[in-house]
View 1 (cartoon, rainbow, N blue to C red):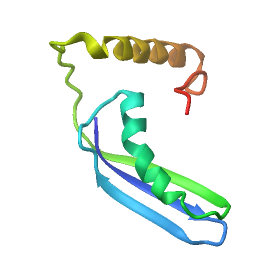
View 2: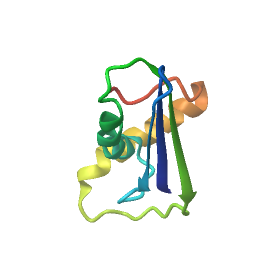
View 3: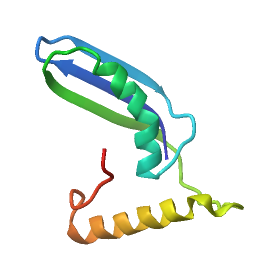
Length: 100
């Protein structure tokens, strides 16, 4: 699980927005990471200037420990992520992803 992330957005006029922070709840589930990072990306994209690049780096990883949940609310998400992983493994990492 990644513990931290760096987000850097570089605009065409060479202005750069950078943010680095700790991930509150380390997770391997794409949907959870996307939901956590979305407000930071929205803040970075407030300027109405063309983008040059977006750089997202995860670092300080910790070993994943899968803990069975007492409540099965996330069961569908976990099954969906496992299915996505199987499809990506067979057809490539860009074969399927969560919609925006």
